[in-house]
Structures are given as C-alpha cells and as structure tokens.
Length: 420
Ligand code: NIG
Ligand code: FE
Image 1 (cartoon, rainbow, N blue to C red):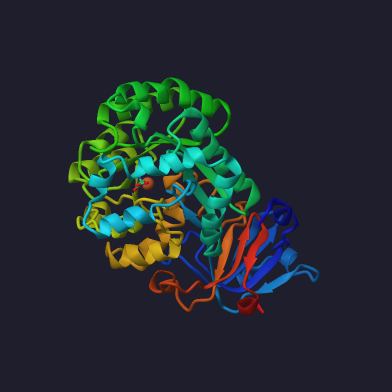
Image 2 (image 1 turned 135 degrees about the vertical axis):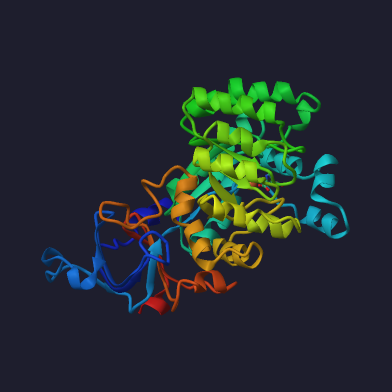
C-alpha cells in the first residue's frame, strides 16, 4: 500500500465486540467473551464484554462485531533479510544436483552472489523487489518486522539497503526495525583480509550508518564460513560504544562459541541454534537472551540437526520463531508457514509457535514495551482470525485465515468476504 493509501486508511476506532481475545498471543491466557475499544491509534480498553465501562457503551461509537472470531496481537517477524536484489533459484538447482550450502558459499556463490545483485540494483529497484515480499508477509497479519542489511558489504550498498528498509516502513502499514549486518560475509574485494574488513565495519560503516539514523541493532554471522568469535567481538564492542543492542546468527552450522560470546554482551537474541549446547542455554538464561528459531532455513537447507527444544524449555528460555526470509536459505514470505514448520519440524506446541511470533518475538527485538501485547494504552496492532481455535494458525499450510488486520488503529487490510 503506497504512502497515500496508508494515510487514507480507514480508522478502526470503536468497540470490537463478540471477540475471543489472546491479548499476549498466549493461548493459555484468553478472554472468551471479549471486547476491545480502539481510539486514536491505541487500545483504550480491553476485557470481558460484560464489564465494558459505561463511557464506551454510548451510541455513536462504531461497533465491530467479529462474530466470535479470535483476536491476537499483530504478528512480528523478528529476523528477516527481506531487502536484497535478485534471487538464487540457480543455486537451488545446484543444491538439488548435490552441492552443499557451504560448498556453494566457499566457491564464491551464496551470499556473495546476492551481494553482486544488491550492489547493482538502484534504490527504487531494490524497493520494488523487496516490497512484493513484504506485501506477502503483511497479508498474513504481520504488523512489525525486523529487516537486516548484509548484502551490500560496503558503505554505499549497506546504506542503500537500510534506506530501503526504512522506506518500506514509511510506505506500508508496518513498523520496521533495522539491523546492521555488515559482518554477514566477507566481500570479494577483502578476500583473505577479514580483520581489515571488520575494522571497516567497526570504524567506518557502523558509525556512519548509525549517525544517519539507519541502525536499530547490530547482528553478526559468527560461523566457520562467516566471522570468528574474535572478529564478532570487535563488532559487538563497536555497537556497545554507540549504545546499540546486539544479536547474533549463532550455532547454525557448527558451534564455535558464538552464543557464549553473544551472552557475554547481553545479546537480545541468538538465532538459528541447531548446534547449541547446554552450557550455551545456561548462559542465555543468565543474560536474558531470547532463542530465535528459524524452521524455514532448517527446512530449505535440509538440516538434520534440530535446535535443542527440550533444553530451551527446561531453562525457560523465551522462544521466538521467524521466517529468516532471505534468498539463500529461506526464500519464504509466510510467517504462518513458519508456525506450521516449527511444530512439524521442531515439535514445538502450537501455543509456543504463536507466542514465538507475538510476545516472544517482541522480546527478541527488545521491544516488548511496544509490541506483542494488547492492553490499555498500547498500540492497536491486531489481527482478527476466522478460526475456531488458535491452534489452526499453526495447523493450516497455505490457507490465510486473516479477516482483518489493524495497525496503529487503522485498517491495514480486511477480507470483505469474511467480515461482512
Ligand atoms: O540467516 N546465515 C547467514 N545468513 C542467512 C543466509 C543468507 C544467504 O544465504 O543469503 C541466514 O541463513
Ligand atoms: Fe538470517
């Protein structure tokens, strides 16, 4: 939806009635005869309809009878690489012929091929290419998204990616948080000079992009085919000097101590985690770091090692779920499909999956004070679902049961058929 349409979007003010509401996304804490009052972009009141205060019973307030449908907070996709040029369908074919993700990366393909396409695209083209992916995510009820840089790997191209991410947030009914992932891969011009590249990231790229207001958080791909623990630490130190929170692509293909480092720097989240150890999980508990699981990447690269769900549960680590939308390992634009996959592939419960894209995803962004909860005084970001039970959000694959999406108190989308 272009900017003009966002401004013109219809207000969702009034009383939302006859609703079953899961205010925090937790299916264990619901209001079965719920009502919610929306005013000036915010939730003005939420509770049992029988207790609706007199001031909201007056005639004249718009009435939105949702016919016993479910309402949850707007969904949050807390780990994406949504902005990039081109795609890697050719590499997909190579992998089908037997090449591994690591082999392709080591032979100059992989992330670096997307870097070439992203550098070559001008800002408008990058915006258009990314917008259609964003539109698909939003159609399923996403109202908040994190978007990383990391396919530019030089200052102008990283800036271009982050500017496009910001523009997407201004042009569509969604809140965008940007993450600088300059340490995603070694750009070809720095071959065999990784330490030098890390100095560029820390001393020039990050401070410049931060000064331009383009960075909300900092991420690093800490892995054998990414950056070492020592190099990753340099980036975290640079982020700390600017007061920026950190997170990490950790323990995806091997365990080189990524999570241990991330927890020492109080990372908001560590993401992927197939190779996470018990000592890592204990450290996460200490540092309050969220586990972000990415079943789309696990599925697409046909990983067989599962993230240690039982350990995460035992240590009561909040678990978020995200698309990791990216051209190499998770070309997915469906967060609902990730709910399904987190259950089928990782054996999460449907309740855990839903909390993973609402309250726990907000925690992973360090924004639990702003997103992932419907309460008086909070933003009116919510979705009305045509489902009998919340488990259906993780059950279907391909069906989109969104009836209405409201973001900032305005209709972002409504299915006429369902809401009539
Ligand atoms: O999250 N692991 C590193 N980054 C991406 C993959 C990026 C790519 O292959 O283009 C990920 O899986
Ligand atoms: Fe990722």
